[in-house]
Length: 112
Image 1 (cartoon, rainbow, N blue to C red):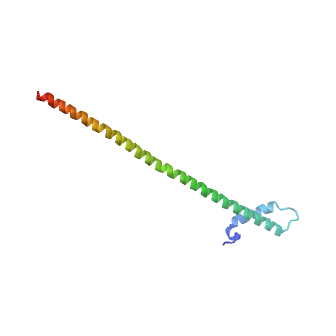
Image 2 (tube, rainbow, N blue to C red):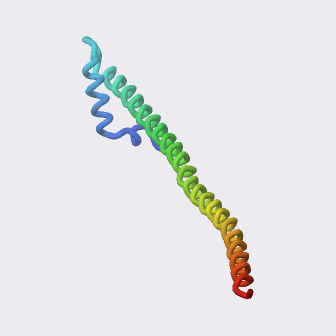
């Protein structure tokens, strides 16, 4: 397990020290200011960690929402193609039947 010092960046340490110095009370020792700065560092580190977790969760939710929407159009396309094939399939036999009867009728008329 890493120590908390290794996880906190130098920039965060500088920011925490600057905040601790800005709120420093008269008569406060350097040690007390350092302790306050360490507490601020931990708070900043915790905030950043929680913020990253929230971003990860939001990203996961976004990815889960985009996956079904990507597969839905494919399903819609397949459904439309299937319904189109069905309509073609129902028209084709009827049109062939009508043509065959017309052809039979014309053949009979020409035979007389």
